[in-house]
Amino acid sequence: MRDKPDASRVPHNQVAIVTGAGSGIGRATVRALLADGWRVALAGRHLETLEATIRDCDTLFSDHGIRTIAIPTDVTQPSSVDQLFAASQHAFGRLDMLFNNAGLAVAGNSVEELAYERWKQMLDVNVTGTFLCTQAAFRQMSTQTPRGGRIINNGSLSAHVPRLHSADYTASKHAVSGLTKACALDGRKYEIAVCQVDFGNAQTQMVAGMKGGVLQANGERIPEPTMDVAHAANAIVHMASLPLEANVQFMTVMATKMPFVGRG
Image (cartoon, rainbow, N blue to C red):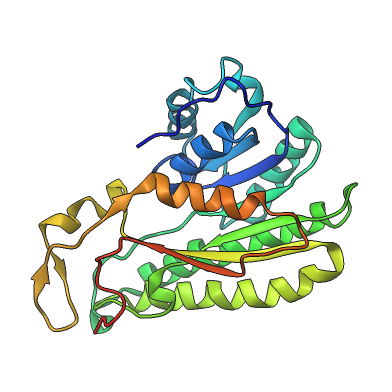
């Protein structure tokens, strides 16, 4: 399901940065934000996938090129993150929302087989990347006029209950939840609302194999239900649409019948 363009909608020109915008939830969120009238800076490792996202949104606005900018970014590198925020500010002038979406998925290795390099890469992308982008957003949002903005972190159901063979991923998402809580406190004095959405089985390429069977905690492999990724994107737009005096601190959006409640 895709949002249909609304010819009567007047763009409100609020500005968002979306990391991991080249595919999956990131791409769907860019599309939903544009449909809601936002201007969007797309961040990701590869320019070609970011440009593909923009082309995918070309039915929404005839002038989508004016409403979007693609910025190749490595969120694990401070200099690259600084360049992202500087380029976005130069293009759009301010920042109203950051969606920290860039991240690595579960590789499926038991802890005794988990390579140090994979562990470090997971923490670098999922945790350090979230921290660096949040820090850069704080610096811009706290000094712009009018002051403030919203930061939404992409958590996971694994921030609550882990899957089998997911020590690196689960640890990273627990850390993201801690960052969300701590930064929500730090943001109060700057009118910055920090929150988190935990998705479960949004239908993207990352979870395409779930219908064929997913390893469960008891060792069985069973198919799992998924949900349209548009529902994930629409949740982000809803959270971002609230006035800064209100905050959805944590939200869970999941396939209704997937194993989560009672998982284990």
